[in-house]
Image (cartoon, rainbow, N blue to C red; front, side, top):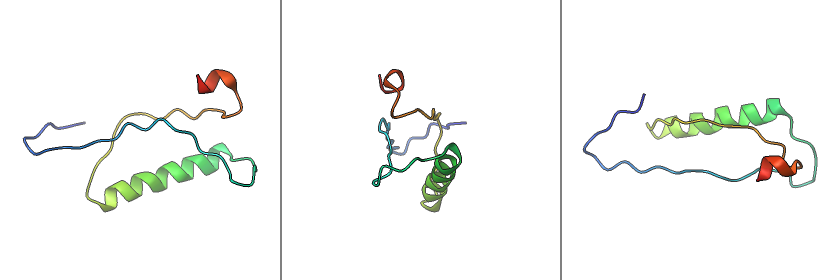
Length: 65
């Protein structure tokens, strides 16, 4: 639940993909762990985040459109 306040609230809208620098596969489980750690980082700043995430196959043309 997002609560609107009178204080200035900044946000980011991310649209990027992540690949392994050595061209190794990244599993769904590894990506889930990364996202959990990303949320933990946000919470360390005493911030909250919301929205949705959709995992895509960076090799599938239809997922990158």
